[in-house]
Picture 1 (tube, rainbow, N blue to C red):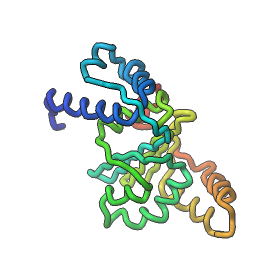
Picture 2: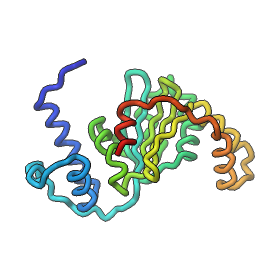
Picture 3: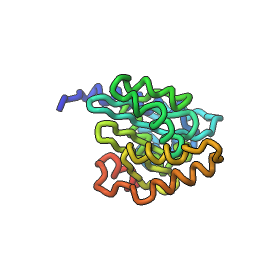
Length: 209
């Protein structure tokens, strides 16, 4: 494993905290820094937080794309639900995984911004503390798996990517159905197909909050 200098670790942490300060309201940010990161008022002052007020209260989705040695982390400017995420995968991603880079898929999710792994990890672990984060999801193309944690219950649900793709095909086969009817079929198709297995250490940290 490559060693990372203390200076570089601090640089990454400071950038992650700066990103937090730019995207979260003052009260939300203070709660995260105090309760989740266990920072004192002195430490918060040391990092120079001016706690700006962010007028936009629209929720976001945190998304991680993984394929072998390649990873891409970003957040959307509007929340992405399971049904839409499955549609994006089946219609725009599944047939292009082997020929396109991961970051080329970001635009399929609408307005979105790249973040680094450290910021993604900190934000993911704060899902139960921040009303701004609607959910966290991972498309693991290497292992054909989709993982999602919703803020409503902070519980991870996992499915094989092929199963969510097939469920979308079944739900959208009849284009005369309403969106709510398609969604109902989609959910019915996924019943009993959730993957029950030990989750990763990163995911368990989020669930334990």
